[in-house]
Length: 250
Length: 271
Image (cartoon, rainbow over all chains, first blue to last red; front, side, top):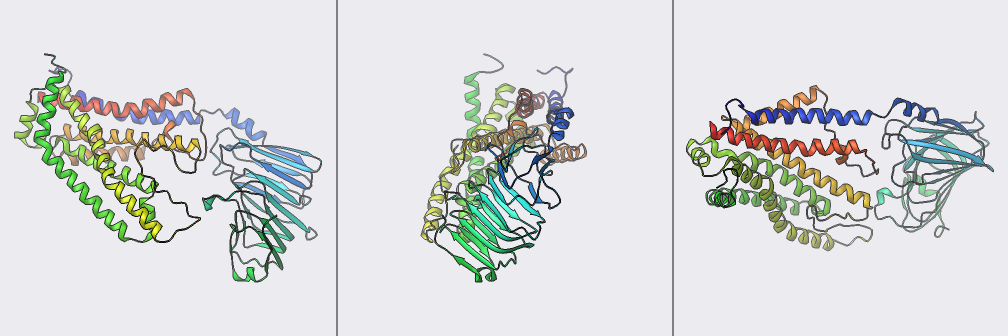
């Protein structure tokens, strides 16, 4: 028999369960926020720096266990050195320059996964004419280049990156992918996407696997596609009218 | 004889429960089978896209989890239905068994036997359906670059996702384990409510749930999943306190609600 002095014990346990839920949630939420402001300030202060100058930029993400997106590469003809401005707490950026090559390495930040609203901005001088990426999930390239700039080469050295070009005008654009495997999941294959405001004189593509999106109204004067059989191309009729195909990718 | 728990007495209680309820359970199963067959007929008669979505591995898993969750809650809500009938209620409450044995039976029937029975039923219906869907998908024309995944889903045992790394397999297992924790919590909540309220038990239980929902919105309390959070992109590292808090929260919650049900049963006997 339950003592009369302890009525509705079940009800009190139910109330305890409700309190347990709300307090537990609150504590877990607090736990997430416990990262000290000092650590965040330290991260932020070290993430705005000038790397140096050169003509080749290499971006790497060696750790496959986190996602690197929201990375913006912006060409600025008014600067002479590569400058990093990382607002993301989810990613940490390291950089060095040697022999004309600028190396950027992306690592986990202080709060991995928290990068959705903040971006990594890398300002590039007009002297950079070759960009190489590996392990980076997606990045956007935009900005202004002086009319004298003749060539820009973008090269992905694995099958991961999704490279989006926006607002860029170049005389000669070379897109290269050295990806050597066919990904079954087409959504996740490395790709080059060219936006509406991209102007190209001559386009050259060298790619064995991956996808190309030229669905905006871009119309290069000359297009040479050296692509493998598995490359998926999306484009308008006008684009293909000027395109030439040449064997498989080298 | 032990007043708290006697295996012999508990066995007799289970047999008496089965003798009294098997028809009701058979009807419950029949309704589930009918609903499943109707939906399967709809899926098979739909376009190829629906067929592929529904009967491939992920589709099977979603169908299983959705069906188990909703039917499991309805089953839990119906368990104490007899308390509404004064005659049946009196017979059940006066049965020679302790409150713990009655609670244990409720826990086993709702939280263990029902999910097991549902899983068995699901396998019996799902396995042939998947084989038919697979044959239809390949008959409609093979697609070399398509990556069909018609493996049969079995809860908690099918741990390997196709084409993914070990971290995704771990997340996949964590997600399933957390589903069963949430299912148990929901079942305990509904069973507790229907055992506690004497008038319109289901309606009042749902009303309490709605009030809690309003309170959580008002206090801006979103469920913090802690170590159970699904994140296929990242390998997360958690501190010891995060592990302890997450486990205490999400295992403590169903435990408290099931414990509340024990006292509700006991209090109904006293009343």
